[in-house]
Image: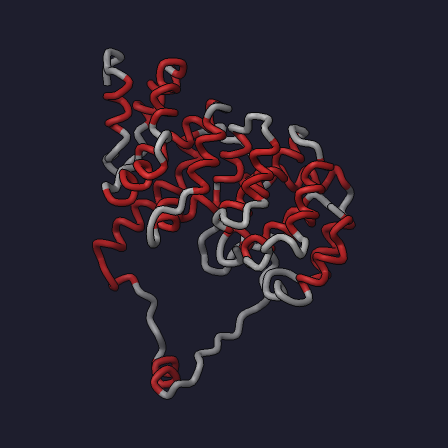
Length: 308
């Protein structure tokens, strides 16, 4: 690839990559960061267009652009990203666009481009009209910023008190999982009673009160070390490495679409008989802690996968 290529040429090469990571194109955009950044930001000016190009035209450009801007630590991307996280489109557009990215990397991407406007983050978290998954993702990003020392702990504490209050809709399970996870990982003992109520009730399948209390008992420095040992809390530093899971998943989805139902899980004869008779299929499973690997085999922590 020649250096004479224009920025639009390089971006076009990311729309439909050939199935492997476009390292040469990414390297050129990184080398020409000042020139590339305005063009990358312009891609996100209209959330509707972003959804349409990605979902219906099956382009991957904005996904690469998201990681590039996070790698750059581009603060101008923060308000554009928040606007995109508020947008739901039509039908399943929101789910189709974000997919695993919402659960896997978006909190650290948002933390990487944070522009010091804490109010903008808390406004989304506390907005009952915003998508629940976006609200919990922003809350997770705020926990990363607090751990990094880029946001006051007292501010996050203030927001979380509002999150778990009668005046805010906190019925969404994923939202509550974020609340409990942050309270445990940042050792926010101020919420101990609320967390125990949730773990003994609505979130009893997420983790145990015993595990939560053990996490509170960990020495603060060790807890901080554990927090940053989780790659979900680390900044975007190596685009190829950080996007590997996403590109692999994108290719899997494409293959699944081509295969149709061939990859569907098999049911045993007993399961089929029970279903035919109207008897629920019950599978005995061990309780999985939220920091354990997910039993589905994804390689992710339970809290970031099936436990979300």
